Length: 202
Image (cartoon, rainbow, N blue to C red; front, side, top):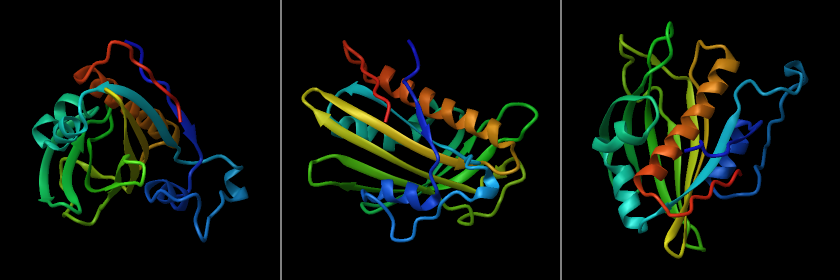
């Protein structure tokens, strides 16, 4: 099966946070400086896939840490640190291509429903939540957003992700983020297949 179509763009931290919060913009939007030659150092990648199941089943599957290695691309180790209705904290360690070391991060996920019934899960990294480990490099930042929109028997799942893995050439980091988004959504689509699979770029 072909990977989902992936779009990319230059997002500042303010802009990616506005996506997570369901807003159109920020009160103080920081533009890319001219010293960067208008080229983003770290890109945000977004894609979506159609899955066929009910929302409760899909939500329960992705929340279960025992399933992480089956669908989250490059996941090596995962554990739940905190679980509640308003937020969940996960520790996730991810593999990296040789000769780089594995990366890890504590992820905070906060769910909410908008007025139209779409489930949003805002995601951000908390690099200082746990002491760093010797067997992994703690990533500098993670910002992201999941959206689950129900349309009849199908659910459109969209993932937007921006990661700064730290101490990695930016073009390599961007390549890895793109493949993470694509492979993760592909695995989720394979777990809950539809007879007709649609992939829609952002």
